[in-house]
Image 1 (spheres, rainbow, N blue to C red):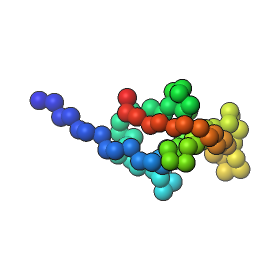
Image 2 (tube, rainbow, N blue to C red; image 1 turned 135 degrees about the horizontal axis):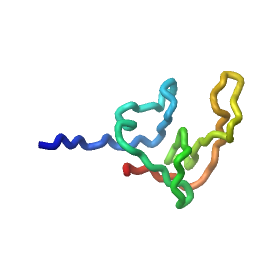
Image 3 (cartoon, rainbow, N blue to C red; image 1 turned 30 degrees about the horizontal axis):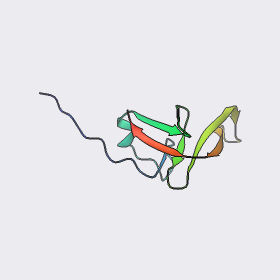
Length: 82
């Protein structure tokens, strides 16, 4: 028998950083896709659908704490399970 679990509903605001209050571990047990301005992005670290923005790393640049420096891009955001 196969044990098929239904994925939880995708939240409006989600972050990949475990220290963020917008991190939901149950969502990351499944493969997630982000479509930004009709193109699929694989480098998104945080998104908000209702406000219409994503955060992506700015190359190899790091902030003073050693975390990637993030750029906030505005546009149409759609999250989905693959």
